[in-house]
Length: 179
Image (tube, rainbow, N blue to C red; front, side, top):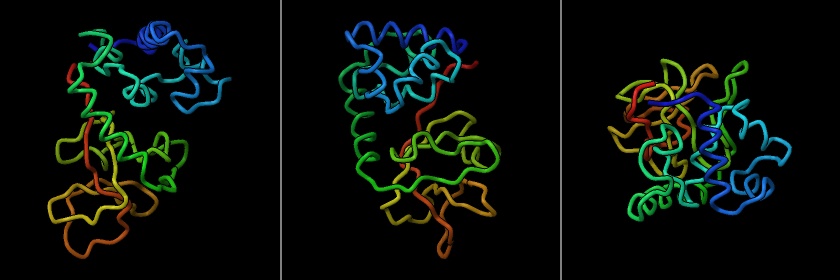
C-alpha cells in the first residue's frame, strides 16, 4: 500500500543514509536546489516526484513508494529502468506546458511526465503513472502519444495525420499496489 508522503520521505532518507550522501549529494542526484531537499525529505513536497531520479543509483521504486521488497532494485530491474531513463535523459526536450498550477512534466529536461487528469488516463494509463517520453521518435499507428490540444496534454493512440504531437510514450512506471 502506498503510504503518506512522510513515510515515503522517511524511506528516501534511509536510502540516502545508506549511500552515505549529504543533502547536497541528494540534491545533485535528483536535480533539485539544495534548499528544497528538506521539503522532499520531510514529505512537504510529494517525494514520489523524485523517486524516478534515484533509480539509476539503485533505489527500488516499489520499496520507496510502499515499503515492500528490498531497498535496492535487483540488477535486471535496475538495468531496465536505467536504460529507459538514460534514453530519456539524452533527448532534448523544451518541456511541456503548464495550465494553471498543474505541472505536466517533472523534470522537463528528463523527458518524463506524470499522468494527471482524465485526458492523460486512457488506454490503461492511471492517474499518477510515470510516463517516459521520446520526443525524437516518429510515432507509428497504435503508439501512445502525448499531444497538446488547447493547452491541455492528452494521451491517445497515434493515427496517421495527427498534429500537435509532443512525444511518444515509450515506458510506463506504475505502483501496482492500491493506495
